[in-house]
Image (cartoon, rainbow, N blue to C red; front, side, top):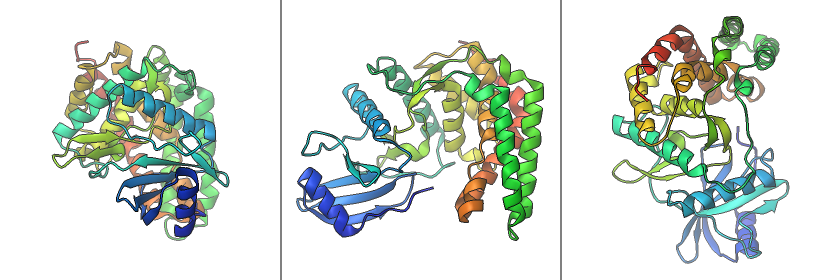
Length: 344
């Protein structure tokens, strides 16, 4: 959910002048993502993107993204280019929020579930290239994790409690409350079933590496031929199970995933393409569907935001993810068996 901004047209022009020495003639608001985003045009006709991050993203966190993007640019990857302030930094503060400016990348974006087969394979390829490049990342500033963050009983119990706590709020909603309560109760029962089954707890040897952290089709800028021109938004980068990033990025790009279901043939193809450029092990193939299931199942995102702020788009997103959970509960083993047929 994007936080309300205190920026006005005049404030943006003044801040950019003060911090970058640039005269801005035009400011256009861009919708999308969790930051407040603006397209700027200077008096010289140069175009830029200004991002005002949510207050939850600290100065330290933004600096990590800056380090990662600058590092990946040096590696030859197509990522945004930061503009440096007059004081030598690549960000400035406005009230309690961190603000950055990047050079504008001309191109188009796509929505979830809109990718062609060629675009799916390209997504898998670039994810592998990013993971490989970050093996050499020189700073010890990314957050790290272990598999227990995704699979422990404690995490599942907390997730159950989060869902239970939303039910009283849903009971007060006369329009969508009944359907939300059903979804929340279904997810609670699925969480309990996953906890009792314990299959995912055996996923102790899955590959954990540095990665984008929010890698999906919404972070791609495409050229006129529909090929990736740039990959943006590394603010969530860190160490995590690579299979989570693979499953999620496949899920978001394949047009066959619109109803919460996977095209397993396409997922296999996606994983095979990733494997052309980076390594996985047998546990990765075996537990990909289970790790993704637990992560999606544990999140209340969408329902919580709607019940607090009435955001219908996020309610639709929450319901969509619940359908993914229902599908994976039925098909996780089938997906696992199919992926294990891949030769490593």
